[in-house]
Image 1 (cartoon, rainbow, N blue to C red):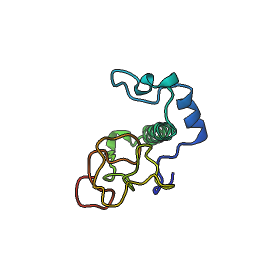
Image 2 (tube, one colour):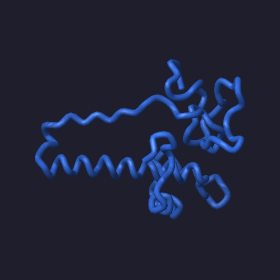
Image 3 (tube, rainbow, N blue to C red):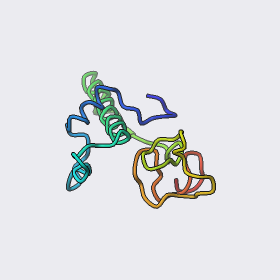
Length: 129
């Protein structure tokens, strides 16, 4: 896991998501179903693969705590930082001309990983994003 470009899934997890294994939480329908062929974008595949890896990692920690007898006497806190590293264009990837133009405070909607959606800013900002 690279904390500066966190949404890069391993090839094995990306392949699972591409094969339409369960990579999204149930939200009343698969968001990819409205696209041609129902395919996820590359950014979505990376993002959902990373979520799967995170879930499996936390599961491994919980299993170890149970196996070692510490689970019942352990507080588990899961936290995250606020916002993306950079508030990027719809695919959620920065670079190659994909960044939001200077002076743009926010994007009107959230289209992919690395997006603060309608919020301004990015990590380390003291407001919303």
